[in-house]
Image 1: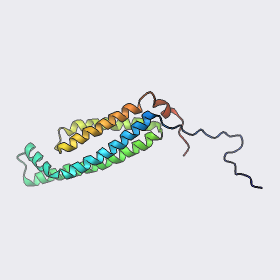
Image 2 (image 1 turned 120 degrees about the vertical axis):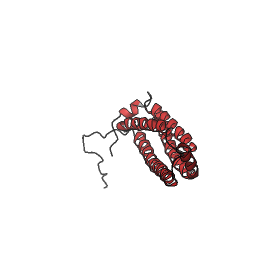
Image 3 (image 1 turned 90 degrees about the vertical axis):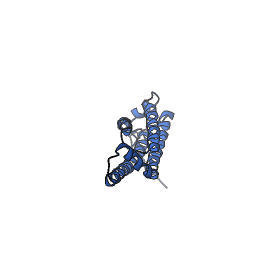
Image 4 (image 1 turned 90 degrees about the horizontal axis):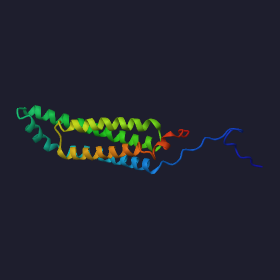
Length: 166
């Protein structure tokens, strides 16, 4: 006769599974995925609008030599692309962690949002493609919406649960 393998030692109570995330957390995660997509768009807009950077650099720094203009173009594109790729990865990581109710993830997401806010403010002083700034504002708005939803009253109980076993 077949005896089923016991799933838990006798007398022990299995840990409860984590509840499904509330709508506020699901919507915050969706906004984080939108933020990742928009961050990828910033990289694409930067690469597509490289030609307009030369004019923006010469307008801001008319005394630059052709070598200085070239170096400024390369620096602007490289930092934007590397920063954009990192941003996409961070958005995806935060969507994953917050969607699973990791307590630390809300705080980390809030810190990243604060950094993004400072970066957006600083971007107005940097040489950039105008399209990238517009999309950057949309990225910031996605982050704002996600933070508001993550710290919403309906979200708090989901993050207060014990983490599900790995």
